[in-house]
Amino acid sequence: EYMGAVLRENPVLVTVKLSGNEFNDRAGKYLADALVTNQKVEHLDLSHNMLGQPAEPGEALGVAMAENVGLKKLDLSWNNFRGQGAVAVAKGLGANIFLRVLDLSYNGFGNSGAAALGAALKSNNVLEELHIGNNCIALEGALALALGLKGNKNLRKLKMSRNPIQNEGCLGILKAIRVNPGAAMEFLDFSVRVGQKGKTSCRK
Image (cartoon, rainbow, N blue to C red; front, side, top):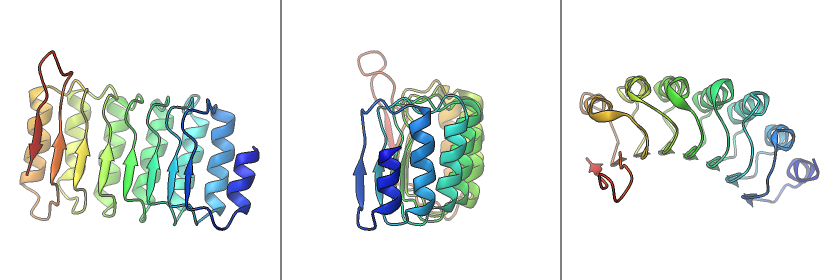
């Protein structure tokens, strides 16, 4: 609550790193509310916390992402976003026109979250980097994400390692980028666990 008040009232903070603070969903709601009013913070790191369950904090963050015009980099990795909360965050991305880098790795977005991200990428042509590694995204989710990539003209880096998307999921994403004449993609990461099947990265 205190940190949320600081964000609301401080007009000069540009970078805020709150990683590993064990923030729960109540704290996430305060921080999300603060982001609606604070338009100065450009880089917010909320990684390695306990945000995301139940769905309300994700929904609050989604609203904040949609309304915030200052954030350029947001790190929500290593939290508990899944289900409706994950979908809400993705919808917030779809409405945001300022965010450049979004790290959602090590959550539980799953196929429904990936589909929501795909829908967001259809309308968002500002985001340059999306990190969604280790999110329980399977083939269905990868193909839904690919639909968004067919028309996206700004995403340059997509990191989705350690997801069971199978060969068909990789190919679906590659085909979506190939048929997009305005694609800006420079780096794709479909890597699996090093030491088991090795690491593979695709560059355009």
